[in-house]
Length: 640
Image (tube, rainbow, N blue to C red; front, side, top):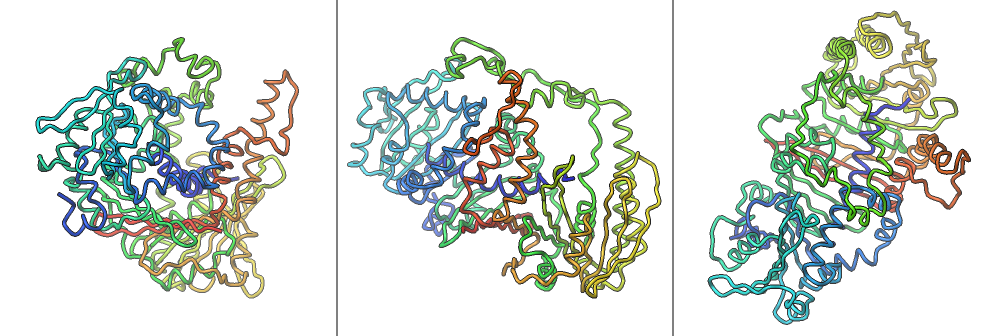
């Protein structure tokens, strides 16, 4: 059976990375320097933007980027995807579309890709200041002759002309935003070879003042985090800076954009991402500033440990992750624990505080104008979250005391097991830990299995406390498979093949077994005996995944293995929902999905369609390194 944590690892790292790349490109198309040296390196546009932005993105060549997007097969695949179709049934997408149409009405023309392509000679940048109101500023170098040919200049009669105290002309139009519930404006100006578009008059005037050199310390490039990160990044195709501290406190970002992943970003203060296209790959470089509470990651993975592990990892493993374990056994303990059994123990929450003041009328009302936007009643077809949450006691803050006590007991048992595993490994001195996962569809009620293994590179394998390790694994099995506080006796046996030896522990109640063995200087642990045997006896892998620079963590997702690792499982995962859907819609008749009909379900439809969008991507590599309150990530999407 496969675990939520494994799905979270694979889907988060591979699909989120691909989807984020598509989203960033789509958003950028739809819509004094850091230092004298850095200004010359490509961040001078940040001088023109006011401070206070939460997101800033700049393009090296916006017209070329738009043309590349319009001509790309990537665009065609995404617009034809189930994910794109489902996007327009969601509240957030319809809110954005509604707001964009309100801006179109105020300008008197459609703000489409061709309009944005015409407002930039090449470079362009956009900054978002308020996500809820969609307050943003766009600035691009643009000469007088080209400005006169733009749709904005030709439609300036639709705007009211105003002037700054120094005589600079700018143009404003009122926007009936959020169906008249908000008063907003959209305006533009052109001065000193710069075109400025803003959805807020104050932001427009501040940008004009910056371009005119009239103010100091109101430039985006004056932001301390921007200055720090800008010195480490060389801009390429697209560069994005985020004020993550501000985003973490933004209600709209957490509720509508990030959903439940806010906790994953709480230790990040700011970040800068740069995207570069090389001959056969996209490279995204990420630099993060962390808060002071973030603990050090210890020493980087040594080249020797990396080579030892990569020789054992199969060349076709769909997912592999390697982490440094030098000086701290936590990474090794986590890898062993998660490779053997599913998930983590969490204590149930006793209550949840609700604040209805965080919602406005647009979240609840069903008005006639909404019927026109959605094409049907907003409540005629409830989302999948209704079935998951409406009767969920934890979601309602009504978790029973028994559930809480059981989880607390299991958590204490988990802590004891982790301590025992740490002691068993301590003398052998783990240097690096790896985890591999091989999802496979199978016949039977469980329909899928998640074969996993952990590979621990040891500095002194002879000192591994085998008896302690076996007791710890047995305790872990009792903790995960039996009622809290219960104990059980599991029997170990030895196996050997092709000169390799390993130990197995049967789990009679599940009809399977777990095991471990030593191969060279590496401890191999697995929840599947077939996988364990292949890792212990298989030929050494010749496929290298190592990197030249020091790293603390390396993750490899091989999308080339998607048929067995994703597609077959997705179809089985959604099969009951598909049949139930058609049974309900066709009055009891179950309609089979035809070979040319895409599934509209979440896994086999939406997620699979994102994989189709990223069809040219064969492999994704994500490497991380930590140093002095900084996190550096490099994501390489290797094309076929």
